[in-house]
Amino acid sequence: MKRSAIILLLMLSALSGFAQELTLQQCLDSACVRSIYARKSSLDVLAARARQGEARWAFVPSVSLTALAYDALDPMVRLTLSDVLGSSDAARVLATDISARAYENGIKPYYETLSRGYGFTATVIQPLYAGGRIVSGNRLADLGVKAALLQEELALKSVSDSVESKYWRIVALQRKDETVDEALSMLDSLERDLRSAVSAGLVSDSDLTELKLKQGEIRAAKYRLEGSLVLLKMDLMDFIGCEYDALALRSLRFSEMSSELLPPEEIFSRARPVEAGDEAQLLELQVEAKQTEKKMSVGEYLPQVAVGASYGYGAMMLPKDGSANGMVFAMVRVPITDLGKASARARRYDYEVQKAEMDRDYLMSRLRLREGMLRLELETLWQEIGSAEEGVAYAQNCLARERIRLSAGQSTASAVLRAALALTTARETLLSKQTAYLTAARHLL
Image 1: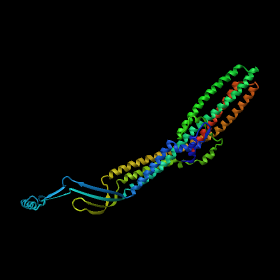
Image 2 (image 1 turned 30 degrees about the vertical axis):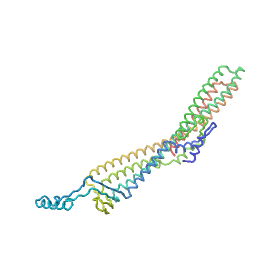
Image 3 (image 1 turned 90 degrees about the vertical axis):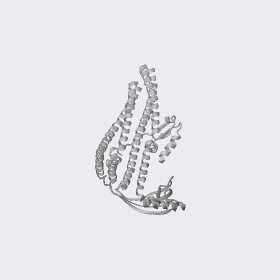
Image 4 (image 1 turned 30 degrees about the horizontal axis):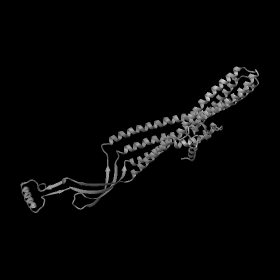
């Protein structure tokens, strides 16, 4: 776990009534380690590495041990004199004579075996050639690891995008809450001025009544805003996998963005080419995987060669003493009747490879289009941010001017409220443009 994520967890576990502050980077670090999507993608990588290790064992000789013991109710082999001599008249006479003499001497006139026995055998088989399936299988496992790593990067990027979206929504509400507090403070100051003006006969009571109504509306909006802010904080804490105290979340603050935004030209210079992106590399791996799958499938119908050795010890016809024996062998398997099926399967995989190549080319064109749209959006937002900053400065000047005119009895409370509302709207517009700019820049980098 990253050090910053550990610090974040310790800090969150110690949240109390006093204010704490989290940065976007701390939230990103925690999400990339503790979010469910990050943990699942990490498990996918581990599973791909396990499959890679499993494929490596195909190069290792196959070793097996076999043990057998049996005890039959009746001997499995019984040979009589008739079985040996045949069924002719002479053979029957000879068999009868021998049987009589055998019984006289306490000897059985037949032979029985395979009534009980045991054996142990060890076999080693080393495949020399399996139609290229061993090499292709390992190649496919390697591609699986690369694909899992790329998918993990894409998953972490998606997690980071979600964290940023949730984070900036909280920051926007924080700034709106601050604006509401400023508006309430300004209205309280304006109320004192209006009471003095009413006493002096400069304004009517209706202006003071309108002000009180507006104060009530803004206070009600502040309560709803604070509730929404706590819910958004809870959502973000759950997403990045951190425990929290619902009461302490009210004092938890999230750092706002720096006023220094990189211009589009600098972002363009840092952006990676589309061909070097994770999505493009994953598309290339998909095509290569299809080609490798074709080789593995065709390899099932190619000649296969293996050598081996076997050694064992046993006594399969007790009561004889046991004995040991061994052998070496070679196996060659050449499929004949499946060659037509192999040809049809190869054509099918050719079509699948062509489909994968078509998907790659089409999606690459879509990625280039997306990059062009992001660049255009970035340049447009940069211009809009400049206009929004000018709008905030203009709204601030208008509010200051209306307050001065009100003090001089040349304006009304309604005009001051409209100016304050215009300033709030201008600030929210600026923040939304800055947030959209950062999101577009992140997609390019």
